Image (cartoon, rainbow, N blue to C red; front, top):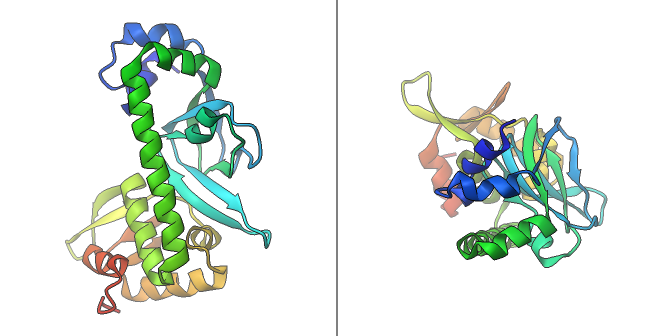
Length: 238
């Protein structure tokens, strides 16, 4: 991998002269993960900034009943676990590759020195930390307050932003394909329900929309209905 080229393509370093990145690039370690391979485990010391170059990562927290709650799914051009790393805490959740995933990773001592030498980058990281924190608070609110189908609709809206691409449907309309290998158990963990509940809702959606399960992911076939469900509109089409 051309580490310098990969770094210059990351949003955090957008517009930064490669000559500035070149000295720190040697401290970045490229890693390749297979599907379901662990990137870090809950409770481990957070010492490494992880940038996703290719693929997707799920962050999951262990529940008291032994199951998992998927806190979020993150894709290319995102940095993960950085809040714990910056605060020098232990990871509050585990991270797993959803499929073949490539990352660039750097120890916090090397990266923090680089940030201290470049205040605009430090401000950009703080902005990203704020966005991450807001995203996690919103997720907890969704899980605690919203009804199941509304949470499910909101999750698919987020997945579409992370991994969606526009496709033409059989009826000529435009849909969004989400090429993520999520099982029914993963869906259940995303919205904090039993697997049977996720299966029931996804089976209903397969028949009536707004989302159809495919052999390699999912397709949003009725974006308008999905938006109504996500907004909590009880008059959304059944």
